[in-house]
Image (cartoon, rainbow, N blue to C red; front, side, top):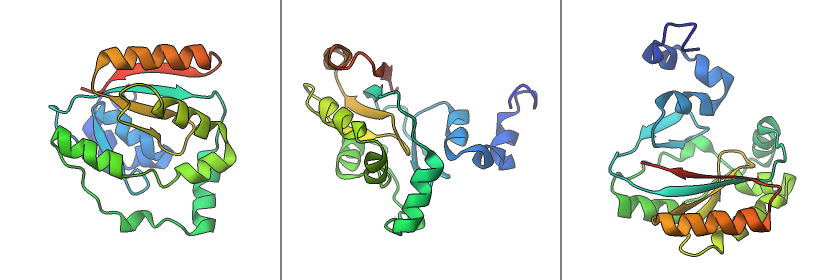
Length: 173
């Protein structure tokens, strides 16, 4: 999209095209740490002083985003517009916010792909994992760490236990 539009990212963001492709596309255009809520259309950039590292793990199993959201609508268990949360921009408060929060799509995705639960438990059991959650509508999961040493250990643990899974270490700062 940037090549077609001569790299005018601000115009692309405002056009509505990214959300018509997928709610995570708009977030990718920001290319920085964000908090998304609603169905992903509400984007809040986070303070650049926040420093985390994350372990990303995916079982290499496809989950249909469309199916997850249609099941959400059928269950009528989530009203994405009712959550008007705003993430704090101090690291300590953000950690508390994340730990006490949840991904409303996680239970639905886990019912479609039970390996997500396996991943979440495996990540949570690693040393010094602050929290483990599913990202978006699945199947990628993450664990947050404040210490790179423990991130490295968690990565080794997951890769050794689940060599068929996709696994990646990332810094979120």
